[in-house]
Length: 155
Image 1 (cartoon, helix red, strand yellow):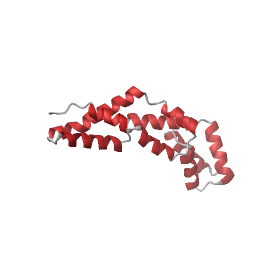
Image 2: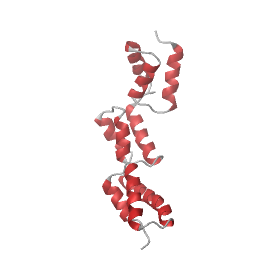
Image 3: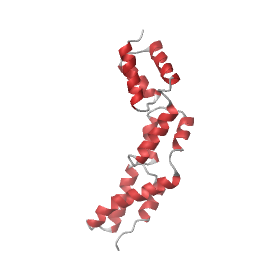
Image 4: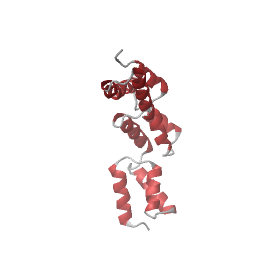
């Protein structure tokens, strides 16, 4: 028998934000719910639409890209931790429009470069620091290269 307080706790956990099956499974284990009880709760959460991996993955990609400004590589590394199916991952990537993605890299490159320009760093150093920062944020080499080459830098 499942403790009603623990069940309420897990319902609140899932209602607060979209969660992956793995996150909820780990939370149930943390609450000391195992075996058939754990599977029963997971099944119930899925049936009641508290738990939906496609919705989670789409929300995750959208949020990390639009709110945090992450690139696909960084988002992909974080998504891999949730053990999602290839089908779910393909659906999630649909949330990023290619032109919006490139525009985001260009905008971020401009914001990164501005204080470096003001501090009168040499142009090659501005390009390198901007490139490195965008790569750390998870943007692919080609996208970053184009964004850095498109910067208007002093002669």
